[in-house]
Image (cartoon, rainbow, N blue to C red; front, side, top):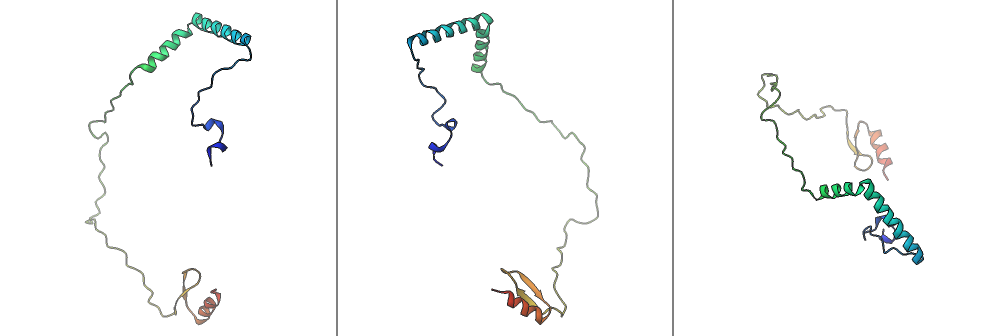
Length: 130
């Protein structure tokens, strides 16, 4: 998708607003008067002091922490049960068909190997192919 189809909140240009425009000079004076009164009110209530504290805290160097691991093992080690084996295990024998009932292996669908036990099954499987 291209950027023109995205929501304006996904803008890559930043969040700055443009220059404030007023309909008239009277409206601009009213805005400036209210802004001055608001700043005076904040100053009387001590909000300016709080803002200074926040700014000072933001300029302070970052705190550093030293993490240390415990010197030794905290829990006792539990030994494994000794069964007398040396640890090496023989691999399982590969199963092989030793009977004489199976005639062979047929391919049913997409290299699906199927055992064939009678000639009727072999004919049925060959008829199922496409």
